[in-house]
Length: 170
Image (cartoon, rainbow, N blue to C red):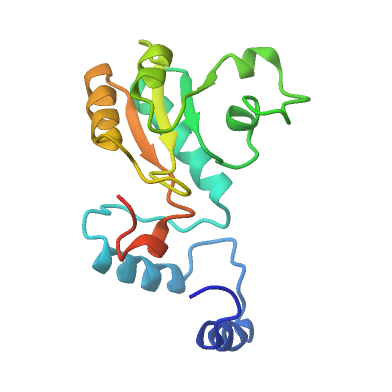
């Protein structure tokens, strides 16, 4: 829909009268979750958050808790939290011990994932595609590689979301 889409803008203006920032769960979140579940039926659990950085950090934390592992491999942009920003050129202020828990790999290069993957990698997080489509069955190979290693695979669909297709790029 892009920016300044008239129907969306009108709905926002109308909602402003009743509030838009709620500290607790709100009925609107339930309504949205039900709509999302209709187009993404395999979304077994839906939680609404304010930012993509918060969502990706929650996903990383859940992956670490579930696997009992520490490391994260990432590709693409995932926000500003320490586990991600520590692998970028903006890593000033991030302790070395934290930086050592994250690594990167090249999109569409399964060998770069294999080289970085070890028994302490809790998750691999990436955007399924943004500027470049997957090649040579990259996403399926990545899924298989992660499964064989006991590593969780997280697709950050902030960009792809509903822009690619109803249900996202997943």
